[in-house]
Length: 533
Image (cartoon, rainbow, N blue to C red; front, side):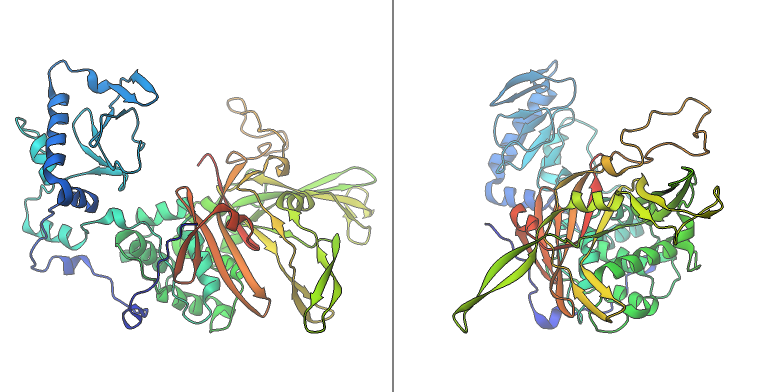
């Protein structure tokens, strides 16, 4: 198995420090602008090794594209055959292949030329890149030469030079997080958020205005800093989430200090904190009250609830009069019971005495079994249910279903069991088999997707929309948080998917792994993202 390990370089230089972020005013101070020599690091590598053949090949392609009446560039050719396209095609710079899409046809061929304008597409960067050498060839005989910088004021050039890097394509976000004193519980949740496509897009698009935020020890500012550092700079050493730790100590209550904490508890804290930071609502109950508590009410429009906010439908039916009471409760994750009564008896060798003993081991469970249990009918005794219609205590049947599906669904597996009577805690070691693709349709309020209501009839007869609102019920696995060891002496790691590959994040260490290792992990939390996102 091929592995790529990203580890810190020098211990003295890698210690996390508080660094003040540069401001716009600082960017306007006199300095010399940096001249871009190459379009990207991959073009630099190409031109350094084979400059003349690359320029000659690009020149031939540009002449072909510019030839009057030429239609050959709209014919795509590959080993599987030929075809025509009314759209732009992509001519490989290193072989005769012509593709109808921007997909890379060979791993070692990193550049294509777009047939309409001759722009260079770098497959490593996954973007069109500007290179002065290629642009000089492309613009010959044309007045439409692209300018890399079209700024009239010297201050504009200084501003761009201060806030841009020469190789932003190399910043892929694959960074570890330093353990700053049993902070692995925080690291795994931050990595899961960092590989969440909605959260990532929000912060990279400056959804949170850090320069305008006046909150002290703001967790949203800290997360913005992390995204900026991960995706704005070409670094491979670990990242010290100092500002995030400060925010946890200030607003996290029991999360303050250097003792080991629960990753699920931290997830709840960070989502509440981000909600508050991005809405300005200081009310402690803001998070719960802002999500729909009744059928048909709107979600909070903050990034947290637009990403993780869902609604559970609870129905209680009286066994006598069949009267049904329906309530709707918000959730940002599902907590599933994983205790399994079925056990297997196994023999365990005792090497010290050259003997053996029998042990009981819980049988593995499927994640779908846990969801079936979560949504299965539950009988309520007459001691715990008072029927309003019968006006007396009655037995009843209670059932939970998902009414509104969130775009991202965190699933919490209850691995830690606490007994109040015995005042003890223990870890549930049941093996949970989870799929890479999960269909949630059987666990929703209506088995099939509801038909759209007729114009003007947005609600059902009982005053709310029918069936599941929101997204399609097929989800794909994005991240897995794992707890290793015992309840009082354990360690958190996580697995996150980037593109089509899986990586294990163990504090500051990042290692590429295969799917088999991910599937064999002792999952504590699972993050599923809707497939149609």
